Length: 269
Image (cartoon, rainbow, N blue to C red; front, side, top):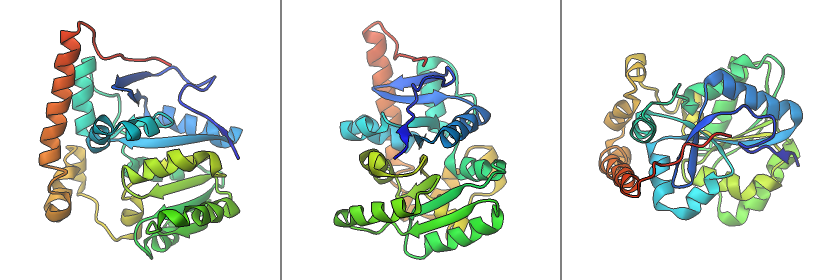
Protein backbone atom coordinates (compact mmCIF):
# COMPACT_ATOMS: atom_id res chain seq x y z
CA UNK A 1 0.00 0.00 0.00
CA UNK A 2 1.18 3.60 -0.57
CA UNK A 3 2.57 5.56 2.36
CA UNK A 4 0.18 8.11 3.79
CA UNK A 5 0.68 11.80 2.87
CA UNK A 6 -1.30 13.90 5.30
CA UNK A 7 -1.66 17.66 5.29
CA UNK A 8 1.32 18.08 7.59
CA UNK A 9 3.64 15.93 5.47
CA UNK A 10 7.28 17.05 5.40
CA UNK A 11 7.99 19.21 2.39
CA UNK A 12 4.36 20.27 1.96
CA UNK A 13 3.89 23.94 1.23
CA UNK A 14 3.03 26.07 4.25
CA UNK A 15 -0.62 27.00 4.01
CA UNK A 16 -3.13 28.95 6.05
CA UNK A 17 -6.20 27.14 7.27
CA UNK A 18 -9.52 27.75 8.88
CA UNK A 19 -9.49 25.43 11.90
CA UNK A 20 -12.98 25.23 13.37
CA UNK A 21 -13.73 22.74 16.14
CA UNK A 22 -11.10 20.35 14.82
CA UNK A 23 -12.09 20.63 11.16
CA UNK A 24 -9.23 22.19 9.16
CA UNK A 25 -9.85 23.66 5.71
CA UNK A 26 -6.72 24.64 3.79
CA UNK A 27 -6.56 28.03 2.09
CA UNK A 28 -4.64 27.10 -1.07
CA UNK A 29 -4.94 27.87 -4.75
CA UNK A 30 -5.81 25.40 -7.48
CA UNK A 31 -2.24 25.36 -8.77
CA UNK A 32 -0.88 24.71 -5.29
CA UNK A 33 -3.31 21.85 -4.81
CA UNK A 34 -2.44 20.37 -8.21
CA UNK A 35 1.20 20.41 -7.13
CA UNK A 36 0.38 18.45 -3.99
CA UNK A 37 -1.68 15.91 -5.91
CA UNK A 38 1.12 15.39 -8.44
CA UNK A 39 3.63 15.06 -5.62
CA UNK A 40 1.58 12.28 -4.03
CA UNK A 41 1.30 10.50 -7.36
CA UNK A 42 4.99 10.82 -8.18
CA UNK A 43 6.18 9.82 -4.71
CA UNK A 44 3.59 7.03 -4.52
CA UNK A 45 2.29 8.32 -1.22
CA UNK A 46 -1.39 8.43 -0.39
CA UNK A 47 -3.45 11.61 -0.11
CA UNK A 48 -7.15 11.82 0.81
CA UNK A 49 -8.90 14.91 -0.55
CA UNK A 50 -12.27 16.31 0.48
CA UNK A 51 -14.22 19.29 -0.82
CA UNK A 52 -15.63 21.02 2.25
CA UNK A 53 -18.91 22.82 1.67
CA UNK A 54 -21.36 24.14 4.27
CA UNK A 55 -23.24 20.83 4.31
CA UNK A 56 -20.08 18.87 5.10
CA UNK A 57 -18.95 21.31 7.77
CA UNK A 58 -22.35 21.31 9.47
CA UNK A 59 -22.39 17.51 9.60
CA UNK A 60 -18.86 17.50 11.03
CA UNK A 61 -19.77 20.08 13.69
CA UNK A 62 -22.79 17.99 14.70
CA UNK A 63 -21.14 14.55 14.47
CA UNK A 64 -17.81 14.10 16.27
CA UNK A 65 -17.10 10.77 14.54
CA UNK A 66 -17.39 12.45 11.13
CA UNK A 67 -15.15 15.32 12.25
CA UNK A 68 -12.60 12.76 13.42
CA UNK A 69 -12.74 10.99 10.04
CA UNK A 70 -12.01 14.26 8.24
CA UNK A 71 -8.74 14.75 10.14
CA UNK A 72 -7.04 12.35 7.73
CA UNK A 73 -8.06 14.51 4.75
CA UNK A 74 -6.72 17.52 2.99
CA UNK A 75 -9.87 19.66 2.94
CA UNK A 76 -10.34 22.55 0.53
CA UNK A 77 -13.05 25.19 0.38
CA UNK A 78 -16.14 24.57 -1.73
CA UNK A 79 -18.90 27.13 -1.88
CA UNK A 80 -20.25 30.36 -0.53
CA UNK A 81 -21.08 29.01 2.93
CA UNK A 82 -17.46 28.12 3.71
CA UNK A 83 -16.34 31.53 2.49
CA UNK A 84 -18.84 33.22 4.82
CA UNK A 85 -17.49 31.12 7.65
CA UNK A 86 -13.95 32.15 6.80
CA UNK A 87 -14.93 35.82 6.71
CA UNK A 88 -16.57 35.48 10.11
CA UNK A 89 -13.62 33.77 11.81
CA UNK A 90 -10.58 34.96 9.84
CA UNK A 91 -11.75 38.29 8.44
CA UNK A 92 -11.10 37.18 4.87
CA UNK A 93 -12.43 34.70 2.35
CA UNK A 94 -10.53 31.77 0.88
CA UNK A 95 -8.24 32.63 -2.01
CA UNK A 96 -10.08 30.36 -4.44
CA UNK A 97 -13.25 28.31 -4.53
CA UNK A 98 -12.20 24.71 -5.22
CA UNK A 99 -15.32 22.68 -5.90
CA UNK A 100 -14.71 19.11 -6.94
CA UNK A 101 -17.04 19.15 -9.93
CA UNK A 102 -14.75 21.64 -11.66
CA UNK A 103 -11.43 20.82 -10.06
CA UNK A 104 -11.22 17.07 -10.73
CA UNK A 105 -11.84 17.41 -14.50
CA UNK A 106 -9.37 20.30 -14.60
CA UNK A 107 -6.74 18.17 -12.90
CA UNK A 108 -7.31 15.28 -15.29
CA UNK A 109 -7.01 17.66 -18.23
CA UNK A 110 -3.81 19.19 -16.84
CA UNK A 111 -2.17 15.79 -16.36
CA UNK A 112 -0.55 15.05 -19.71
CA UNK A 113 1.11 11.87 -18.47
CA UNK A 114 -1.01 8.71 -18.22
CA UNK A 115 -2.85 8.02 -14.96
CA UNK A 116 -5.17 5.16 -14.03
CA UNK A 117 -8.57 5.70 -12.42
CA UNK A 118 -11.15 3.62 -10.58
CA UNK A 119 -14.70 4.99 -10.29
CA UNK A 120 -16.72 3.98 -7.23
CA UNK A 121 -20.23 5.21 -6.55
CA UNK A 122 -23.56 6.45 -7.91
CA UNK A 123 -26.42 4.25 -9.12
CA UNK A 124 -25.83 1.10 -11.20
CA UNK A 125 -24.81 2.02 -14.73
CA UNK A 126 -23.71 5.58 -13.91
CA UNK A 127 -20.05 4.78 -13.26
CA UNK A 128 -19.86 2.86 -16.53
CA UNK A 129 -21.33 5.78 -18.48
CA UNK A 130 -19.01 8.21 -16.71
CA UNK A 131 -16.04 5.97 -17.57
CA UNK A 132 -16.92 6.03 -21.26
CA UNK A 133 -17.14 9.82 -21.27
CA UNK A 134 -13.92 10.24 -19.28
CA UNK A 135 -12.13 8.01 -21.79
CA UNK A 136 -13.27 10.32 -24.60
CA UNK A 137 -12.43 13.53 -22.73
CA UNK A 138 -9.05 12.45 -21.37
CA UNK A 139 -7.63 9.75 -23.66
CA UNK A 140 -4.23 9.99 -21.98
CA UNK A 141 -5.70 8.31 -18.89
CA UNK A 142 -7.08 4.81 -18.45
CA UNK A 143 -10.14 3.69 -16.48
CA UNK A 144 -9.14 0.43 -14.80
CA UNK A 145 -12.35 -0.30 -12.91
CA UNK A 146 -15.87 0.82 -12.04
CA UNK A 147 -18.29 -0.16 -9.27
CA UNK A 148 -21.66 1.30 -8.32
CA UNK A 149 -22.14 2.66 -4.82
CA UNK A 150 -25.10 0.51 -3.78
CA UNK A 151 -23.28 -2.13 -1.77
CA UNK A 152 -23.97 -3.43 1.73
CA UNK A 153 -21.41 -3.06 4.54
CA UNK A 154 -20.78 -6.79 4.30
CA UNK A 155 -19.61 -6.33 0.70
CA UNK A 156 -16.90 -3.79 1.58
CA UNK A 157 -14.10 -6.37 1.56
CA UNK A 158 -15.09 -7.48 -1.94
CA UNK A 159 -15.21 -3.86 -3.12
CA UNK A 160 -11.73 -3.22 -1.69
CA UNK A 161 -10.42 -6.37 -3.34
CA UNK A 162 -11.77 -5.17 -6.68
CA UNK A 163 -10.11 -1.78 -6.26
CA UNK A 164 -6.80 -3.29 -5.18
CA UNK A 165 -6.77 -5.74 -8.08
CA UNK A 166 -6.86 -2.69 -10.39
CA UNK A 167 -4.31 -0.74 -8.26
CA UNK A 168 -5.38 2.68 -9.62
CA UNK A 169 -3.46 5.90 -9.30
CA UNK A 170 -6.70 7.76 -8.53
CA UNK A 171 -9.83 6.48 -6.79
CA UNK A 172 -12.93 8.64 -7.25
CA UNK A 173 -15.48 7.91 -4.50
CA UNK A 174 -18.97 9.22 -5.26
CA UNK A 175 -21.10 8.12 -2.31
CA UNK A 176 -22.18 11.57 -1.10
CA UNK A 177 -21.16 12.99 2.24
CA UNK A 178 -20.70 11.83 4.90
CA UNK A 179 -20.64 8.29 3.43
CA UNK A 180 -17.79 8.85 0.96
CA UNK A 181 -15.46 10.45 3.50
CA UNK A 182 -16.30 7.77 6.08
CA UNK A 183 -15.54 5.05 3.51
CA UNK A 184 -12.20 6.64 2.63
CA UNK A 185 -11.17 7.26 6.24
CA UNK A 186 -12.11 3.76 7.38
CA UNK A 187 -10.45 1.95 4.48
CA UNK A 188 -7.60 4.14 3.22
CA UNK A 189 -4.93 2.00 4.86
CA UNK A 190 -6.31 -1.03 2.99
CA UNK A 191 -6.60 0.65 -0.41
CA UNK A 192 -3.84 0.44 -3.02
CA UNK A 193 -4.31 3.87 -4.60
CA UNK A 194 -2.44 7.14 -4.41
CA UNK A 195 -5.23 9.75 -4.54
CA UNK A 196 -8.53 9.05 -2.78
CA UNK A 197 -11.03 11.77 -3.72
CA UNK A 198 -14.56 12.23 -2.39
CA UNK A 199 -16.34 13.63 -5.44
CA UNK A 200 -20.07 13.75 -4.65
CA UNK A 201 -22.20 14.00 -7.78
CA UNK A 202 -19.28 14.18 -10.22
CA UNK A 203 -20.01 10.79 -11.78
CA UNK A 204 -23.65 11.75 -12.35
CA UNK A 205 -22.58 14.94 -14.11
CA UNK A 206 -19.91 13.18 -16.16
CA UNK A 207 -22.34 10.45 -17.19
CA UNK A 208 -24.95 13.03 -18.26
CA UNK A 209 -27.41 11.80 -15.63
CA UNK A 210 -27.44 15.21 -13.91
CA UNK A 211 -27.26 18.73 -15.34
CA UNK A 212 -24.82 21.41 -14.16
CA UNK A 213 -26.11 24.89 -13.48
CA UNK A 214 -25.69 27.42 -16.29
CA UNK A 215 -22.43 29.35 -16.28
CA UNK A 216 -24.11 32.50 -14.96
CA UNK A 217 -25.29 30.66 -11.82
CA UNK A 218 -21.82 29.19 -11.27
CA UNK A 219 -20.12 32.55 -11.79
CA UNK A 220 -22.33 34.12 -9.11
CA UNK A 221 -21.77 31.07 -6.88
CA UNK A 222 -25.49 30.28 -6.92
CA UNK A 223 -25.32 26.76 -8.28
CA UNK A 224 -27.13 25.62 -5.13
CA UNK A 225 -30.18 27.68 -6.18
CA UNK A 226 -30.28 25.91 -9.54
CA UNK A 227 -30.00 22.50 -7.86
CA UNK A 228 -32.75 23.40 -5.41
CA UNK A 229 -35.09 24.46 -8.21
CA UNK A 230 -34.45 21.20 -10.09
CA UNK A 231 -34.71 18.85 -7.10
CA UNK A 232 -36.78 20.57 -4.39
CA UNK A 233 -37.94 17.38 -2.69
CA UNK A 234 -34.48 15.85 -2.37
CA UNK A 235 -32.53 19.04 -1.65
CA UNK A 236 -35.19 21.22 -0.02
CA UNK A 237 -34.07 20.69 3.58
CA UNK A 238 -30.35 20.94 2.73
CA UNK A 239 -30.72 24.32 1.05
CA UNK A 240 -33.31 25.85 3.40
CA UNK A 241 -33.46 24.48 6.95
CA UNK A 242 -29.86 23.27 7.02
CA UNK A 243 -28.58 26.63 5.79
CA UNK A 244 -30.31 28.36 8.70
CA UNK A 245 -28.90 25.76 11.12
CA UNK A 246 -25.42 26.22 9.63
CA UNK A 247 -25.52 30.01 10.00
CA UNK A 248 -26.86 29.76 13.56
CA UNK A 249 -24.16 27.23 14.45
CA UNK A 250 -21.22 29.23 13.17
CA UNK A 251 -22.59 32.43 14.74
CA UNK A 252 -22.93 30.63 18.08
CA UNK A 253 -19.36 29.33 17.82
CA UNK A 254 -18.06 32.78 16.91
CA UNK A 255 -19.83 34.41 19.85
CA UNK A 256 -18.55 31.67 22.15
CA UNK A 257 -14.97 32.23 20.95
CA UNK A 258 -15.29 35.96 21.54
CA UNK A 259 -16.73 35.31 25.00
CA UNK A 260 -13.73 33.14 25.86
CA UNK A 261 -11.48 35.91 24.64
CA UNK A 262 -9.74 33.80 22.04
CA UNK A 263 -10.45 33.52 18.30
CA UNK A 264 -10.84 30.20 16.55
CA UNK A 265 -7.33 29.08 15.65
CA UNK A 266 -5.96 29.71 12.19
CA UNK A 267 -3.27 27.07 11.80
CA UNK A 268 -0.18 27.07 9.60
CA UNK A 269 1.44 23.82 8.62
